[in-house]
Length: 212
Ligand SMILES: Cc1cc2nc3c(=O)[nH]c(=O)nc-3n(C[C@H](O)[C@H](O)[C@H](O)COP(=O)(O)O)c2cc1C
Image 1 (cartoon, rainbow, N blue to C red):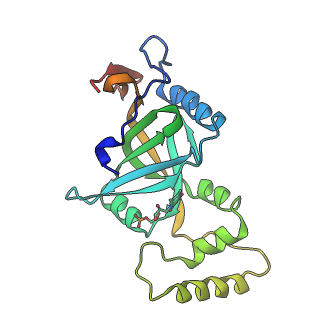
Image 2: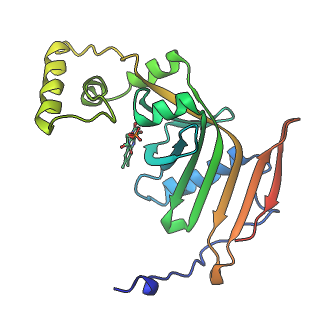
């Protein structure tokens, strides 16, 4: 299969300045609900990009676990590679791709830890095995083998067989506080619609159209 033969025309929807919400978080909510209604697989999966202080980027998928006027939240291991990068350079970017809707959303901004209480609350909504997994996995570290990981898991499982699993201090949430959010809608002939909101210092948002 020649890669140049993989071509798709985007033609399902359009996006115009007149129709979008003045508030990008509400606009995100609208698109996110449509992604859920369309029964896309894991519409809350997003690419998170972070970078070292000297600008070397890294990216991976994480799951959106909440959004509101404060920003976009996800949970992870604070000692992971992303955690270390964010501790040294608190800027990040998120990308959603909703294939069937021919849509992409890009979010950029500072990334802050959510408060411990919020992490605590979310941690205890997770299934038992996920809570044990958070304890057992030294995320992003080199490990000797799968067996080692599974035996640490079993050890924690036994230790917490009463079902009480405390949140480890190294596990919790981050929030991306957006200063820019771009909505991309695929259109025919590669003349896609791109509307970008930029946060204004005095409050509110500026809306601009970008060339595709
Ligand atoms: C669909 C999907 C969802 C994921 N969700 C999360 C998540 O919410 N939190 C997380 O820490 N890792 C999640 N991961 C794993 C990350 O992509 C990554 O492997 C892990 O966070 C370690 O990344 P790092 O070494 O860059 O820190 C997910 C992976 C996939 C494919």
